[in-house]
Length: 170
Image 1: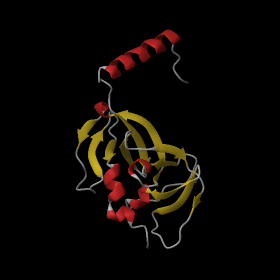
Image 2: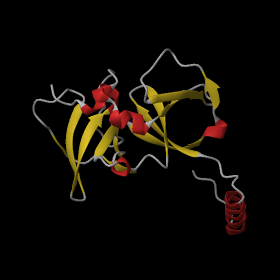
Image 3: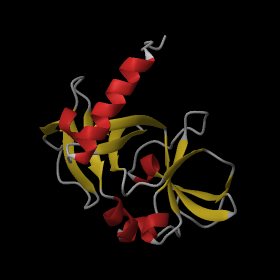
Image 4: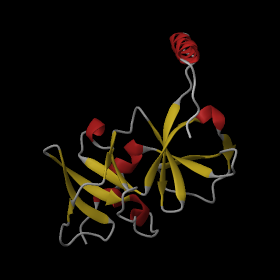
């Protein structure tokens, strides 16, 4: 059950957040997503819209991680199963699955299929952690939350220009 707060408490909280934002004290918010068994963070200024999984049209002669084409409000997006792209299990296409429309801001209509979104995270609440080993250029710093989960910062610009990401033909 959600915690109930009074209108006065809500207004005070909102006023404090607005004052902090004006002073430049606002914490950098990141969007958390789950892809396979891994947790990723996307900068809100780079990420795009998050939409429920629409019907996908498969494309013949493409790699197994290329999930297909999605029509979002009349615009076609190429959809990459982010977990399968990384060599992990394919994303389950269920009610929790989401599309991250990540490329429009960078001039491409690309979307990432992920297992679910996990809400906003603050970089200030995460401690630096060591990475398992050398990763791709688009896999940034690794952080750890209070529950011990490791989160990797996703560098969207680097992902969208990665030759492996762009080569969808089989």
